[in-house]
Length: 461
Image (cartoon, rainbow, N blue to C red; front, side):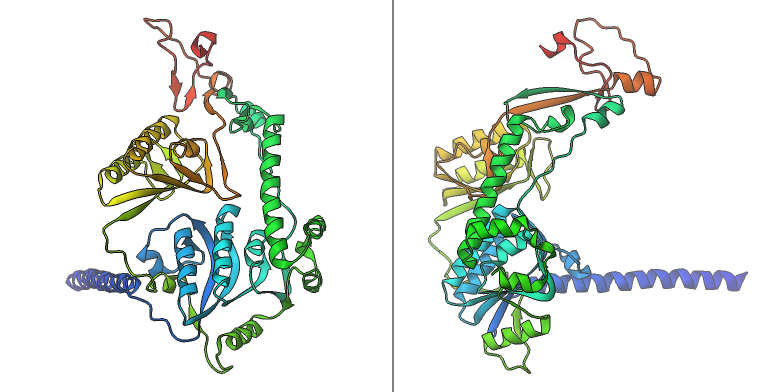
């Protein structure tokens, strides 16, 4: 028994010590990762900036040392980092070109268009852009079409098939569950509630979706046509053929690609372009490196500041609702007040990328933008979306700038309530009774988010 206790105690101590050691090693490694992220990148001669897209794109991303430590198959990219890195690559004489590897990037066409425009600006320096992928998704091909040379794998493919939307309608499903959806809507084109009350698009919604799709597709056609020197009629004809499943040789024949190469051949080609010998390694800089490359432009020490404030995500007015992809109304209002009172800030650029959200919250932000504009210029830059509440918080600015593919506009408001009378009584066997002191005292009585009875005419009025 004594030996058993002794060995048990030793095992417990061993586990505790091992835990302490691994914790210390983890902290040391984490500190190292953080320290390395703050170290300025030294650019070697004849370097290439590798834009290796494999993940998702948002307006901005917060550094997460733990994710860097563990590694991720798919990365999160900030649009601001991408645009700044391309600009620094243009200005740095040691960087000879950009190698674009567009594996996958979850992004809308408005964001892709901004990156594409930055790449066009990069080409003004006379440096090269080479794009290579095994399979180009259509959005990635749109981005890559700006390259001096578009290369595809001999067994690869290019997505080219046009644009489409396919909304899902839940009306019959909701009915089968025993729920009744009661909708309050202002605006013919406010279609967000249609999936719950219809089985197909209304004429108004079909009209606006068609207009939106055609507008975006015409922009894509025009840009690709300009870069690849292919008439738009031909590009539309290729899309009708659904080029995704063609033999790779056909992409070269029709002008969508310049040549076919395997990955090792692309690397050899890049060495030639950058002035490296075949036996040398490429001097490659990736996004994490470019973020820490010093800008050529000296820092303005005048004390005059143009502030850029990012408002992206759904607008939520619940306290503490701020996340990386949501707008906390209270926090944003407080931040805008600080910018208004800061004498060093001479103007504010409000970057909006929001589909909207709370009408009340949007109104509070709008009020702060109005007050901010009374003291200094406010310029709005729209990203992927500035719709509904996203447009509302933008409309008070002095000037508004949007991308051609930005989805924007304010087309109404809506409210939606679920009544579960059939679900509760027929399916679950629940019954409700009520006593009340006033006519509408039981308005809003519910189990969770579902009302126990539908709203009557008096309630709705």
